[in-house]
Image (cartoon, rainbow, N blue to C red; front, side, top):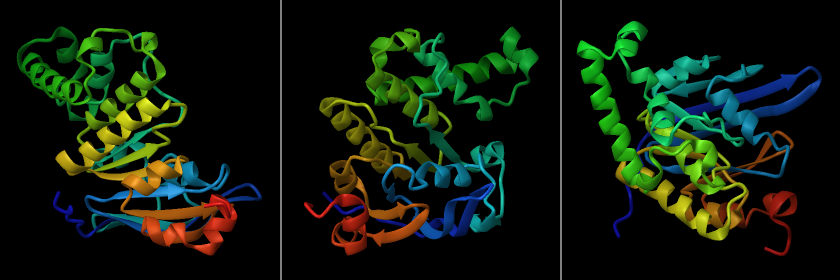
Length: 261
């Protein structure tokens, strides 16, 4: 298997600090993400990992610092701007429409791509009808890719947890992101479900060329699939490098991995 080609820096996080009242959630954190890599963010509970993703995708406004995406630098972006620029996100707690079918949840991910106004969409006439056909065809390809064809008409709330996580990934993919932010995509999964999700993440990265930023607690998964890893502890960066470099970093071992590793 040929080694994949990692590109130039696509996302550059500079000196990000985030405060809530007197509490420092993040302190002076800098790291970058290169095109086509899988970049993991790890650390104990409360280390600031989800807060970091929330700063990147516009949910939180950093107290200090900047984020540069494809050469454009921002001190703050709102979530819609971030999505329009090509950054999609999955959440730790599933934010799916439980009463809607799998295919309708994925179609919700196409929302930014739909050009027809709401009135034409509701009537499904003319250009709106043709556009919907195209979007549904795209969504069907994702359903095939994620191997959930058998559940396409099933209400998401009736699916087992592992499949709901897969639908969540599918909805993010429906946005055709350049960068995909995954917040603990394997939390609560059994071994088989984790293996499936690992395979899909690697395939998304390989076949779609999508750059992935991943928060994950399972160290085996992180070390297996990541190109580079940044380590947070109490809102500060304590390590950054390849999985091997991080694995052998004394500060990381003390703070997170435990001396037994």
